[in-house]
Every structure is written in structure tokens, then in C-alpha cells.
Length: 148
Image (cartoon, rainbow, N blue to C red):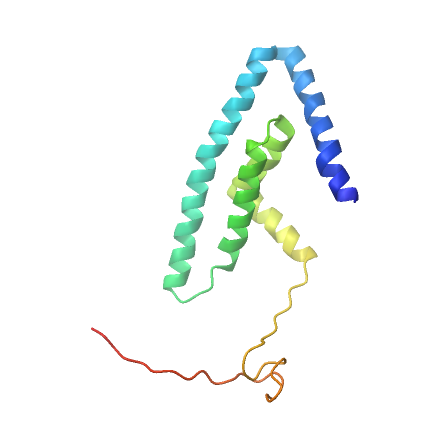
């Protein structure tokens, strides 16, 4: 409940307050144009960073590596894009933090430190296999045909 309270009540109230304060300093029209400008700038940055992340993921997959960090970065980029589409300067700043590479990676590292990741296998030989050995890897059978 506290997280929902923060998201749906506190964040919009803070955004309204900041918009009113900035509007009194620079005026209503420049404030609206600045909000639209940050959305356009953020969209371009999101597109660029998204393609860069996709390229790194493809390079890792070509080398036979799992693009784990790139997957986390994709989630952060999607969150940043959603925050930039939300009108307001506070959410725009949070969105830009998700789009700038070094801040994005720092946010991901901080989130990963707070998470606990578990891996289980439910295939043949995994812990859920009633006839398996409970943790050894099973054998995958199939046919192979080389095409040149």
C-alpha cells in the first residue's frame, strides 16, 4: 500500500507543485514547451540508447554469452521512457537517469544488490523431476543434421 500511495498520490502532487513553481518563474507557455521538449529529447535519447543496448546484446549472443546486463538495461530504458512520457519535471529527471548509460548501470547495480536471484531447473534431472537425481543435469535427445 505505501508504494501505491507514493506512486499515485505523492508523485502527482510533487509534479503539480514543481510545475506551478517553475511556471511562476518562467511563465506558463515556456513551462509547457519545456515539458514537451524534454519528452522529445528523451524520445530521441531512448531510441539511441535502445539501439546501442540491442547492438551490445547481439554482440554478446554472437559470442555465445548471455546478454544479462543488456536485458536489465532494456527494462531500465523502458521505465525511463515511461517516466519521460509522464508530464512533469521530476519524472523527467528520473527518466533521464534511466537513459544516461553510467547512471543507468549504477541504478541497475544498486537494484541487483537488493535482489536475491535463485535458479532452479524443472526439466529432466532437475529438482522437480520425480525420477531424477534431484539436481543433476538431464540428457537432451535429438537429431542433428548439418546444412552448408
